[in-house]
Image (cartoon, rainbow, N blue to C red; front, side, top):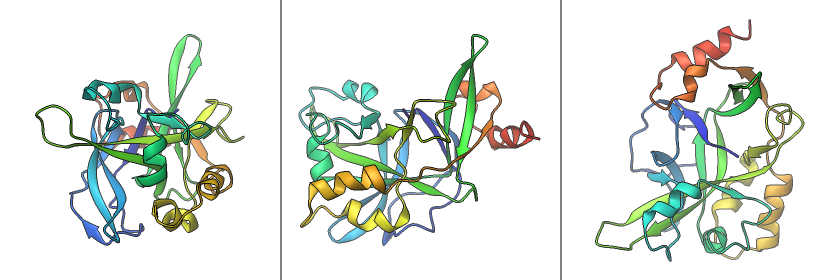
Length: 222
């Protein structure tokens, strides 16, 4: 799964035509928070903010989003919660790193994962707009997950699906597409090699959101 991640740099390396939100560094991003997302809209790649935790258009209320922060790649195209978004509303979710946990001596130890060169990357995501109730439109996203690669398995059996940059355009384009080919991107077009290091357990609390989260991870490796 993917339950926490980090974004502290502006996603200048991503294909963005229009920016509608400010990027504020967050070293402990958690579900329900608003996060920067890149969607394809009216022929442009737009960076805007969405709540993490997908609320399908048919939902009775927003609380369902609490249990839909992730979508499994194996079933994303068939489950009612995700299949419409998978066909029509795929997105990129920029990040600098993500956390996973491993139980060691009865305690949950967080680990921080990055690319080997520590460059930003993008989760494969889905987005929806919910207009139920008398509230303003509620925009939300889910991160797609897949089986862990060999570099992640020692810590967790699942990992977020991180797209290789050459697949960004096809992933977001919902016009004239073959969904079987889109599914293949999740199977063959994701990043598999990750660097990992332990992080201070203060990351376990969402309240701890500071650059020191990552500084501590670097120090613990030395």
